[in-house]
Image 1 (cartoon, rainbow, N blue to C red):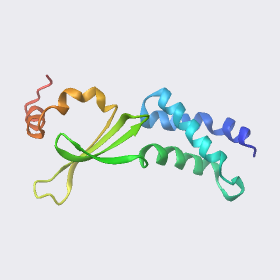
Image 2 (image 1 turned 135 degrees about the vertical axis):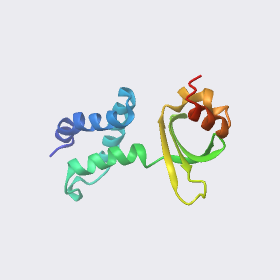
Image 3 (image 1 turned 90 degrees about the vertical axis):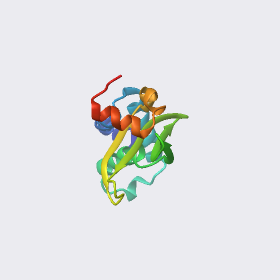
Length: 134
């Protein structure tokens, strides 16, 4: 199959996958373009299942690559940046004994949460327990 045929056949499916994960059409379109830009540089004869390979590249490229460690509300976490802009933040809330994760928070477009970034973790936890939405 030619690259044009592959693009035509899988573009919509990959966009849908990226959109479900990102929730932003422009970022989803960029993701599909990035995937095909990488795919063009590969030897297609070595790829047994193009659909599976492109799907994996779409998911992995957006969510497994590009994370860097960061402190979020004073706690360790991960940030993913794109074009200098933070597009995802991941933070874990640990059990008191610290042996396992109690909750995992994944936030897309964390710039929308800037008012919470100035609060201490204790303040955020107490507001959540009290049901405050300020």
